[in-house]
Length: 242
Length: 85
Image 1: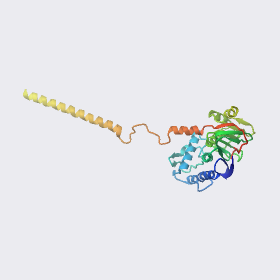
Image 2: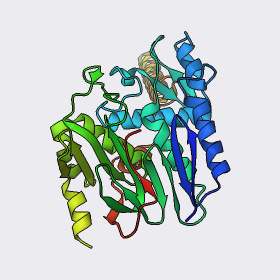
Image 3: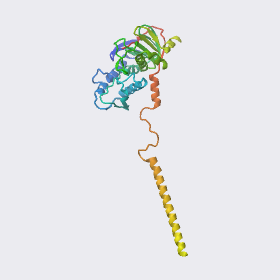
Image 4: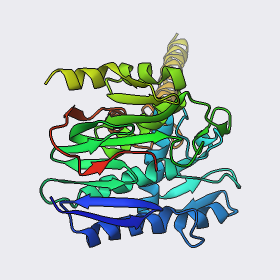
């Protein structure tokens, strides 16, 4: 399996089983639309717009709809407004309406959606990883934080936490950096998006994270700040039954 | 007698005409009332349907968002690692 590395979206992209240039083009398209660091990105233009109604591109509309669905499914723990006002953003087709001044930040879903889109380019077996958020086609072994590895048979795997950049995950319930007892949470999902959302929510819920994953039969692995490793029941079960 | 008989017949015809007119009026009013109820613009014939995505689609999306993948024990050296970014 030939593995290629390059930089995009501010992180390392690792690709196997797909043409790296084509994968890079996918990430460039997503970054061009949703980067908050590019003044000419569509997201920056939407956030600068002073009107309450704005027309957006099909890609933007689809992505925002996913972000709003994720916010609803997670009771706002993954919130595209970062301030608990996601219910005030409404989408009708390609028409976005929201209170003037309500800025959007779609980073909670954009990277994992880009990974899933890039993974569509895999012709046979392979994977796409963006900063450790992974989608696979065919089984791929993946190294885990603090040692160990698992095989991702189908879907995706993602890790969320504070390990690499300090407390960068805001808790929308408080507007403050999360005080989760976990350093990192790794979760599996039916896609990279599902894994990323599960990892974020399980991290933000703190001690309630393992139970949240168990209720949804999602496998997750938690690394506490003191290095202790806690596995959800489905993680343990998946590794024990084979 | 003949005059009384003619007056009685005239009154009977008048009563019949009044009944016909009253019945016709009621009939026209009833038809118009029912027709207005059914066809008048601004009155929904059925329950309003939301313009957003169908519930079945939303359920599918939600299932996908909160659905775990498949994992198993690793069997070889991993070519990639998961971590926070």
